[in-house]
Image 1 (cartoon, rainbow, N blue to C red):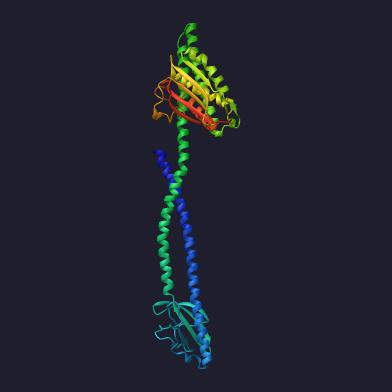
Image 2: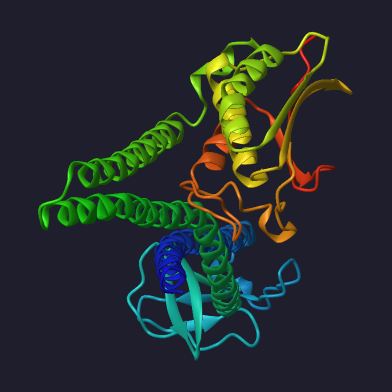
Length: 409
């Protein structure tokens, strides 16, 4: 639970940073869009005002009556339903409106060009030109432009808020998914370290106890020999654990074993591996049988990796079969697949444990000794050689391991 909480905090932190970056980017884009839009609308207003002033100036010149002949100027050509007003301002600052309903123009100092000015209670865009000794001023309300700008900002705020929430949620989900494999690997590493420490501590504790006991008081030679045999047994067990851990560590580093590129005869390698266990099986009262297909049984894997795989499965089967039990190893070709089957007459593997028996240091309740690393090594070899393994029930009454490779004819 603590690890999950840490993962969520990390994911939330990543999502918050991504959201802030997204917010800054959104604000910059929105500001740029608003600036471009307002600039375009203002340019359109300026163009209309200049066109109106050009018409007014031309009419005044053509009529030969000066600016006085412009009373009753029409706005019938206005295409955006916003009236354009025209005023005349003489040298004394007296203002005369040419369009009915024109608002009162403020008394200001005029100059050629365009400006934004409050006229009445509205914001106007005003453009002025010099005509004879007076000023001709055309103006249009930009209240609609302001409303468009305000509406756009409102939409951007609402859309931005929704977008940022979605961005945070998406970044959080992506962050959790990205952290899950890392967290899983960290947990597995912690569990592996803890289990390895436990496994190494046990034989070391036994060795330490045997030595202390042997040195606690004088003993006869046989007692010392017995103590040394027990120490030697634990030392060999410790050696096996260390070798298995080193093998698994190298497998984790390379991910794909280098021997995948080679090939070997599965039947020959399996026969040799089974042969090594015949003496041990006979000594323990286990019947060990081997059946090999007469067809070609070449697999894409090195002989060393297949030998170790068969050795792990046969050793495991012999331990679980127990005295008076039986183990059967089969190599055969079936439906374009090459099968290695190892079966025993032991207690079998419960269905609920079949998905976790390959975990490192995992042991079933009926485990017959061992370190819990053998099947983990077998699983690493199976994956590295692109094989497939199915765990089930054997006709002998115990477990059945079926490993298959693509058949290389």
